[in-house]
Image (cartoon, rainbow, N blue to C red; front, side, top):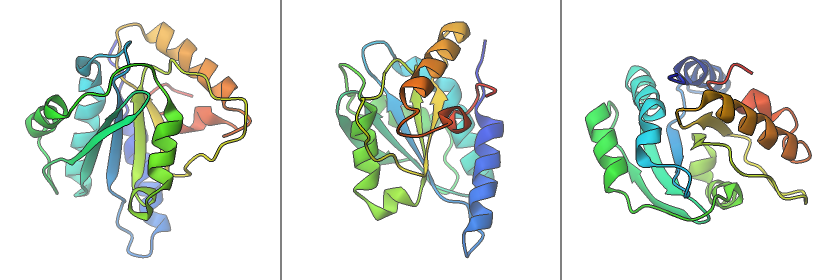
Length: 181
């Protein structure tokens, strides 16, 4: 089953544009989970949806890989990145590998006013549990499935992640694109 994030991404960009003085949607920053359980090919659908929306909205798309550390960031061809260019950029990035730790992405976003201004989306299989302590979570950060073949498992993992993050970001389900929450 193909998981599509396009409708949710389009809605969120429109909502954020209305909140900005220039009525321009923010740029998009994708964080591609490349921990041991995820392969580059699992990101194809989400990458396609994000590039499609960026082309329509005329915004830039940034792409960063991560696992237990944040990898390199690349700016995809802008303002109308093509899917081929996006896929080549993802394929060319140095790959983060190892276990997943969303906190590294949170810290990375919070460390930069420019990154705080973008609509950030973690593309993931949701196989991570939040720490028990309260940690800052970026207000501009959302989550989306990375299109692994087992939708039932993705859905269950997303709910488990949301439960584990209740003390950090209540109602995380509302920040998950493409899962129908």
